Amino acid sequence: MSEWRAAQRPLVSLAYLVDLPIVHCACGSGYDVCQEWIPSVNWIDLALQQLAREAGVVVTVLATQGSVPRGAGTRMVVFAQGEQGTIGGGHLEYQAITHARLLLAGQTDETQLRHVLGPSLGQCCGGVVELHFQPVTGSDMARLHAELTPKRSPLALFGGGHVGKALVKTLAPLPFVVRWVDSRDEIFPGDVPAGVECEHSNPVQAAVADLAPGSRVLIMSFSHAEDLDIVIACLKRLREKADLPFVGLIGSATKWATFRHRLEDRGFSAQEIAQITCPIGVPGITGKEPEVIAVAVAAQLLQTL
Image 1 (cartoon, helix red, strand yellow):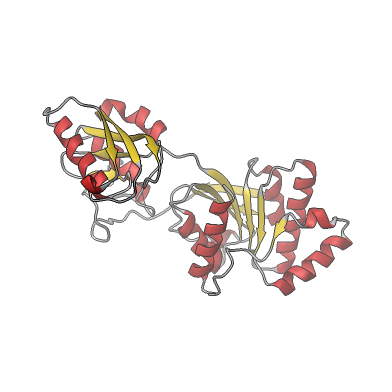
Image 2: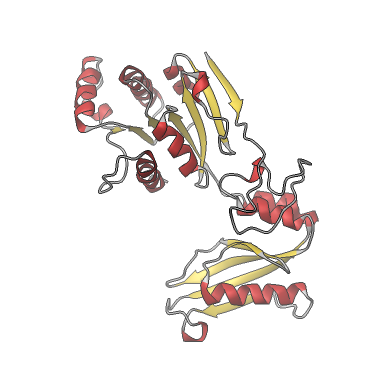
Protein backbone atom coordinates (compact mmCIF):
# COMPACT_ATOMS: atom_id res chain seq x y z
CA MET A 1 0.00 0.00 0.00
CA SER A 2 1.40 3.38 -0.99
CA GLU A 3 0.23 6.73 0.29
CA TRP A 4 1.38 9.94 -1.36
CA ARG A 5 1.28 13.37 0.19
CA ALA A 6 2.65 16.74 -0.77
CA ALA A 7 5.43 18.27 1.26
CA GLN A 8 4.24 20.51 4.07
CA ARG A 9 6.61 23.13 5.46
CA PRO A 10 6.20 25.94 7.94
CA LEU A 11 5.91 29.53 6.75
CA VAL A 12 9.03 31.42 7.75
CA SER A 13 10.86 34.52 6.62
CA LEU A 14 14.31 34.01 5.15
CA ALA A 15 15.00 37.68 4.44
CA TYR A 16 17.34 37.90 7.42
CA LEU A 17 19.24 34.75 6.42
CA VAL A 18 20.07 35.43 2.80
CA ASP A 19 20.83 38.48 0.71
CA LEU A 20 17.51 38.72 -1.10
CA PRO A 21 15.22 41.52 -2.11
CA ILE A 22 12.13 41.66 0.08
CA VAL A 23 9.40 39.80 -1.80
CA HIS A 24 5.85 39.85 -0.46
CA CYS A 25 4.33 36.46 -1.09
CA ALA A 26 1.24 36.35 -3.29
CA CYS A 27 -0.22 33.57 -1.18
CA GLY A 28 -1.47 36.14 1.33
CA SER A 29 0.46 34.62 4.22
CA GLY A 30 1.81 38.01 5.28
CA TYR A 31 5.38 36.73 5.22
CA ASP A 32 8.14 38.25 3.11
CA VAL A 33 9.20 34.84 1.85
CA CYS A 34 6.86 31.88 2.17
CA GLN A 35 7.35 28.13 1.92
CA GLU A 36 7.13 28.27 -1.87
CA TRP A 37 10.58 29.86 -1.91
CA ILE A 38 12.39 27.55 0.45
CA PRO A 39 14.88 25.91 0.67
CA SER A 40 16.75 26.44 -2.57
CA VAL A 41 15.71 30.10 -2.83
CA ASN A 42 14.63 29.47 -6.42
CA TRP A 43 15.76 32.47 -8.45
CA ILE A 44 13.10 31.85 -11.10
CA ASP A 45 10.28 32.11 -8.57
CA LEU A 46 11.82 35.21 -7.04
CA ALA A 47 12.18 36.81 -10.47
CA LEU A 48 8.55 36.12 -11.34
CA GLN A 49 7.38 37.52 -8.02
CA GLN A 50 9.31 40.73 -8.64
CA LEU A 51 8.05 40.83 -12.24
CA ALA A 52 4.49 40.88 -10.94
CA ARG A 53 5.29 44.32 -9.47
CA GLU A 54 7.64 45.86 -12.00
CA ALA A 55 9.03 45.50 -15.50
CA GLY A 56 12.27 43.68 -16.14
CA VAL A 57 14.60 42.50 -18.87
CA VAL A 58 15.43 38.86 -19.57
CA VAL A 59 19.09 38.54 -20.57
CA THR A 60 19.76 35.37 -22.56
CA VAL A 61 23.03 33.88 -23.74
CA LEU A 62 22.16 33.33 -27.41
CA ALA A 63 25.39 31.77 -28.62
CA THR A 64 28.97 31.22 -27.52
CA GLN A 65 32.37 30.53 -29.00
CA GLY A 66 35.40 29.20 -27.18
CA SER A 67 35.84 29.36 -23.41
CA VAL A 68 32.90 31.10 -21.71
CA PRO A 69 31.43 31.06 -18.16
CA ARG A 70 27.92 29.86 -19.14
CA GLY A 71 26.44 28.14 -22.16
CA ALA A 72 23.79 29.11 -24.69
CA GLY A 73 20.31 29.27 -23.19
CA THR A 74 21.47 30.61 -19.82
CA ARG A 75 19.22 33.41 -18.57
CA MET A 76 18.92 36.03 -15.89
CA VAL A 77 16.30 38.70 -15.20
CA VAL A 78 17.33 42.28 -14.49
CA PHE A 79 15.20 44.91 -12.75
CA ALA A 80 15.73 48.59 -12.05
CA GLN A 81 16.80 47.51 -8.57
CA GLY A 82 18.23 44.03 -8.26
CA GLU A 83 18.47 41.02 -10.51
CA GLN A 84 17.86 37.27 -10.34
CA GLY A 85 19.92 34.49 -11.87
CA THR A 86 23.36 34.78 -13.45
CA ILE A 87 24.96 34.51 -16.86
CA GLY A 88 28.36 33.85 -15.34
CA GLY A 89 29.33 36.84 -13.24
CA GLY A 90 32.35 39.04 -13.79
CA HIS A 91 32.53 42.12 -15.96
CA LEU A 92 30.44 40.47 -18.67
CA GLU A 93 27.48 40.26 -16.31
CA TYR A 94 28.10 43.78 -15.02
CA GLN A 95 27.96 45.11 -18.57
CA ALA A 96 24.83 43.07 -19.30
CA ILE A 97 23.05 44.42 -16.20
CA THR A 98 24.04 47.98 -17.09
CA HIS A 99 22.70 47.60 -20.63
CA ALA A 100 19.47 45.98 -19.41
CA ARG A 101 18.81 48.94 -17.12
CA LEU A 102 19.44 51.38 -19.95
CA LEU A 103 16.83 49.45 -21.92
CA LEU A 104 14.40 49.65 -19.00
CA ALA A 105 14.97 53.40 -18.75
CA GLY A 106 14.33 53.91 -22.47
CA GLN A 107 17.91 55.11 -23.04
CA THR A 108 18.64 52.47 -25.69
CA ASP A 109 16.70 50.20 -28.00
CA GLU A 110 19.53 47.79 -28.76
CA THR A 111 18.46 44.24 -27.87
CA GLN A 112 21.49 42.22 -28.95
CA LEU A 113 25.16 42.55 -27.99
CA ARG A 114 28.34 40.63 -28.74
CA HIS A 115 31.09 40.51 -26.13
CA VAL A 116 34.65 39.23 -26.55
CA LEU A 117 35.90 38.00 -23.18
CA GLY A 118 39.28 39.64 -23.41
CA PRO A 119 41.25 42.49 -21.82
CA SER A 120 38.55 45.08 -22.62
CA LEU A 121 36.23 43.27 -20.18
CA GLY A 122 38.97 42.50 -17.69
CA GLN A 123 38.55 38.79 -18.44
CA CYS A 124 40.92 36.28 -19.98
CA CYS A 125 38.52 33.49 -21.00
CA GLY A 126 39.12 34.31 -24.65
CA GLY A 127 35.65 33.29 -25.79
CA VAL A 128 32.79 35.18 -27.36
CA VAL A 129 29.28 35.60 -25.95
CA GLU A 130 26.22 36.87 -27.80
CA LEU A 131 23.49 38.26 -25.54
CA HIS A 132 19.83 39.00 -26.21
CA PHE A 133 17.82 41.47 -24.12
CA GLN A 134 14.03 41.05 -23.90
CA PRO A 135 11.88 43.56 -21.98
CA VAL A 136 9.14 41.78 -20.02
CA THR A 137 6.23 42.64 -17.74
CA GLY A 138 3.80 40.81 -15.49
CA SER A 139 1.75 39.75 -18.53
CA ASP A 140 4.70 37.56 -19.58
CA MET A 141 4.84 35.58 -16.33
CA ALA A 142 3.14 32.38 -17.52
CA ARG A 143 5.30 32.16 -20.63
CA LEU A 144 8.48 32.93 -18.72
CA HIS A 145 7.70 30.35 -16.07
CA ALA A 146 7.58 27.67 -18.78
CA GLU A 147 10.69 28.97 -20.52
CA LEU A 148 12.85 29.49 -17.44
CA THR A 149 11.96 26.38 -15.45
CA PRO A 150 14.67 23.77 -16.06
CA LYS A 151 13.88 20.19 -16.97
CA ARG A 152 14.10 17.97 -13.89
CA SER A 153 14.75 14.23 -13.85
CA PRO A 154 12.75 11.89 -11.59
CA LEU A 155 14.60 10.44 -8.62
CA ALA A 156 13.33 7.93 -6.08
CA LEU A 157 14.96 8.01 -2.65
CA PHE A 158 14.19 5.01 -0.45
CA GLY A 159 14.94 5.72 3.19
CA GLY A 160 14.19 8.57 5.58
CA GLY A 161 17.21 8.26 7.85
CA HIS A 162 19.98 10.79 8.49
CA VAL A 163 21.58 10.40 5.07
CA GLY A 164 18.19 10.50 3.36
CA LYS A 165 17.31 13.75 5.12
CA ALA A 166 20.66 15.29 4.19
CA LEU A 167 20.24 14.18 0.59
CA VAL A 168 16.80 15.72 0.25
CA LYS A 169 18.22 19.09 1.30
CA THR A 170 21.23 18.76 -0.99
CA LEU A 171 19.13 17.73 -3.99
CA ALA A 172 16.55 20.51 -3.56
CA PRO A 173 18.21 23.09 -5.87
CA LEU A 174 19.45 20.45 -8.33
CA PRO A 175 17.64 19.26 -11.50
CA PHE A 176 15.73 16.40 -9.86
CA VAL A 177 12.13 15.77 -8.85
CA VAL A 178 12.42 13.70 -5.69
CA ARG A 179 10.00 10.96 -4.63
CA TRP A 180 10.92 10.10 -1.04
CA VAL A 181 9.75 6.66 0.07
CA ASP A 182 9.79 4.91 3.44
CA SER A 183 7.80 2.16 5.12
CA ARG A 184 7.56 4.31 8.25
CA ASP A 185 5.04 7.09 7.73
CA GLU A 186 6.16 9.04 10.79
CA ILE A 187 9.76 9.34 9.57
CA PHE A 188 9.26 12.31 7.25
CA PRO A 189 10.12 15.71 8.77
CA GLY A 190 7.77 18.66 8.68
CA ASP A 191 10.15 20.90 6.74
CA VAL A 192 10.44 18.90 3.51
CA PRO A 193 11.71 21.05 0.61
CA ALA A 194 9.35 22.17 -2.11
CA GLY A 195 9.15 19.75 -5.01
CA VAL A 196 9.69 16.67 -2.82
CA GLU A 197 6.83 14.18 -2.56
CA CYS A 198 6.75 11.90 0.47
CA GLU A 199 5.33 8.42 0.09
CA HIS A 200 4.53 5.88 2.77
CA SER A 201 4.80 2.46 1.12
CA ASN A 202 4.33 -0.83 2.95
CA PRO A 203 5.91 -3.02 1.73
CA VAL A 204 8.42 -0.43 0.71
CA GLN A 205 9.50 -2.22 -2.49
CA ALA A 206 5.96 -1.95 -3.88
CA ALA A 207 6.71 1.65 -4.82
CA VAL A 208 9.26 0.52 -7.44
CA ALA A 209 6.56 -0.71 -9.81
CA ASP A 210 5.10 2.72 -10.52
CA LEU A 211 8.23 4.87 -10.55
CA ALA A 212 8.37 7.26 -13.46
CA PRO A 213 10.33 5.91 -16.45
CA GLY A 214 13.89 7.16 -16.36
CA SER A 215 13.98 7.45 -12.57
CA ARG A 216 17.30 7.38 -10.78
CA VAL A 217 17.00 5.26 -7.62
CA LEU A 218 18.84 5.57 -4.30
CA ILE A 219 18.39 2.85 -1.67
CA MET A 220 19.21 3.52 1.99
CA SER A 221 16.38 2.15 4.13
CA PHE A 222 16.62 1.44 7.85
CA SER A 223 17.23 -2.30 7.35
CA HIS A 224 19.31 -4.52 5.09
CA ALA A 225 16.26 -6.71 4.53
CA GLU A 226 14.32 -3.78 3.08
CA ASP A 227 17.34 -2.72 1.05
CA LEU A 228 17.54 -6.17 -0.50
CA ASP A 229 13.82 -6.22 -1.29
CA ILE A 230 14.09 -2.86 -3.05
CA VAL A 231 17.17 -3.96 -5.00
CA ILE A 232 15.34 -7.11 -6.15
CA ALA A 233 12.31 -5.05 -7.22
CA CYS A 234 14.59 -2.72 -9.20
CA LEU A 235 16.38 -5.62 -10.90
CA LYS A 236 13.06 -7.17 -11.87
CA ARG A 237 11.93 -3.88 -13.35
CA LEU A 238 15.22 -3.50 -15.20
CA ARG A 239 14.76 -7.02 -16.58
CA GLU A 240 11.28 -6.14 -17.85
CA LYS A 241 11.62 -2.49 -18.89
CA ALA A 242 15.28 -1.41 -18.62
CA ASP A 243 14.13 2.12 -17.72
CA LEU A 244 16.05 2.88 -14.50
CA PRO A 245 19.33 4.52 -15.62
CA PHE A 246 20.91 4.48 -12.17
CA VAL A 247 20.26 2.30 -9.12
CA GLY A 248 22.52 3.03 -6.17
CA LEU A 249 22.72 1.21 -2.85
CA ILE A 250 24.35 2.68 0.23
CA GLY A 251 26.74 0.36 2.01
CA SER A 252 30.23 -1.00 2.34
CA ALA A 253 32.05 -3.40 0.04
CA THR A 254 31.32 -6.14 2.60
CA LYS A 255 27.59 -5.43 2.52
CA TRP A 256 27.61 -5.50 -1.27
CA ALA A 257 29.48 -8.83 -1.36
CA THR A 258 26.77 -10.34 0.83
CA PHE A 259 24.03 -8.85 -1.34
CA ARG A 260 25.66 -10.15 -4.52
CA HIS A 261 25.60 -13.72 -3.21
CA ARG A 262 21.95 -13.39 -2.18
CA LEU A 263 21.01 -11.96 -5.57
CA GLU A 264 22.83 -14.79 -7.34
CA ASP A 265 20.88 -17.26 -5.21
CA ARG A 266 17.68 -15.62 -6.46
CA GLY A 267 18.61 -16.19 -10.08
CA PHE A 268 20.03 -12.84 -11.15
CA SER A 269 22.96 -12.98 -13.55
CA ALA A 270 26.27 -11.23 -13.01
CA GLN A 271 25.35 -8.82 -15.82
CA GLU A 272 22.08 -7.93 -14.13
CA ILE A 273 23.69 -7.50 -10.72
CA ALA A 274 26.30 -5.18 -12.26
CA GLN A 275 23.50 -2.67 -12.89
CA ILE A 276 23.51 -1.86 -9.16
CA THR A 277 26.04 0.73 -7.95
CA CYS A 278 27.40 0.02 -4.48
CA PRO A 279 29.00 1.77 -2.66
CA ILE A 280 27.58 5.09 -3.85
CA GLY A 281 29.15 8.53 -4.13
CA VAL A 282 32.02 9.91 -6.17
CA PRO A 283 35.32 8.29 -5.17
CA GLY A 284 37.89 10.02 -3.04
CA ILE A 285 35.47 11.51 -0.48
CA THR A 286 36.03 9.59 2.74
CA GLY A 287 33.88 11.47 5.25
CA LYS A 288 31.02 9.55 6.85
CA GLU A 289 28.93 12.51 7.97
CA PRO A 290 25.45 12.50 6.37
CA GLU A 291 26.02 15.88 4.73
CA VAL A 292 29.35 14.75 3.25
CA ILE A 293 27.80 11.56 1.89
CA ALA A 294 24.94 13.62 0.45
CA VAL A 295 27.33 15.86 -1.50
CA ALA A 296 29.26 12.87 -2.85
CA VAL A 297 26.08 11.09 -3.94
CA ALA A 298 24.56 14.23 -5.47
CA ALA A 299 27.74 14.74 -7.51
CA GLN A 300 27.53 11.15 -8.74
CA LEU A 301 23.89 11.62 -9.75
CA LEU A 302 24.75 14.75 -11.73
CA GLN A 303 27.29 12.69 -13.67
CA THR A 304 24.45 10.42 -14.85
CA LEU A 305 22.43 13.20 -16.50
